[in-house]
Amino acid sequence: MFTQMQNPLVSVIIPVFNDSQRLKLCLDALEKQTYPKHCYEIIVVDNASEENTEDIVSQFSQVILAYESNPGSYAARNKGISLANGEIIAFTDSDCIPAQDWIDKGVTRLLEAPDCGLVGGKIQLFFRNPDKLTLVELYESVVAFPQKQYVQEIRFAATANLFTFKSVLEKVGYFDSNLKSRGDLEWGQRVFRAGYKQIYADDVCVLHPARYTFSQLHQKIQRVAGGIYDLKTEKSVLKNFKEVYRDLRPPIEFIFKYLPDIKLNGINKKVQFLYVVLFIHYVKAWENMQLRLGANSKR
Image 1: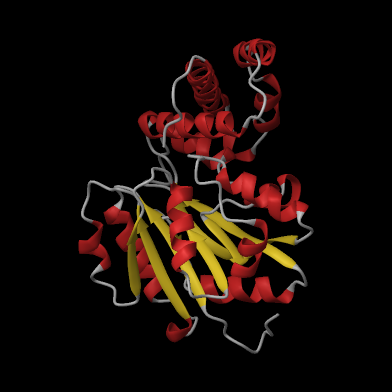
Image 2 (image 1 turned 45 degrees about the horizontal axis):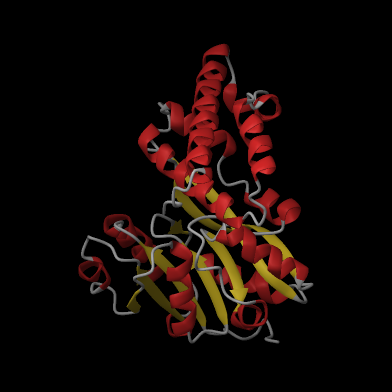
């Protein structure tokens, strides 16, 4: 194991799919890290984008560009892992903006905890106009990316902000490349079952844009619904019937969990939040129905 006096080589892996402009902001932030420049590499894995990712990546001398034709961010991340030279692997997304000390703090937190399998850092939302949130942004401000809960209760970390050792990946295996969503959940729980500690670190921070429109939200619902469905091992007729019944019931527990949130001050915001919750719930029910009837999961 490494000591805190060392600066181990870090491989930062970023999958990208048709997101070259936001990727540039991410790479700008990674170029300005406090961690010694010779001690980290950046691997961008293009997942069959229609945009020209190479034009962006060519502006950054420290970045390696790779390609993965199999659809899905987890297949792309696995490609990056296979090329990584670092003892430590850091994951973020093309739409994230890491803090200047992101690598420094992530490495420190990973090294200071014995038998640490992963560090999940804070994912801080930002908004186009913080003084005038859209309905979708309001919803996201309340529920999106509860990374601390992910790590401490569900035993995984979202790959928007995740540090691990390459040796851990070699022991428990890479991500399930067949999954379009929730691959971080499946992998994180493998890490937990292998006996490794999992740490949440509030000071290891990336910024992430809140989804802005119902179209963006719809795309996420499709991806997550497919990821959850692909994770299921039992897909019997009886279980499907029970799940249809569950999907059609209003999400009462979820609503009462979040309605008291301080961000939903006033009846107007509570009504707006409820509208988005019901939109998500019944769009997800429709997506689940299509998956049960044989549709393929979407990226």
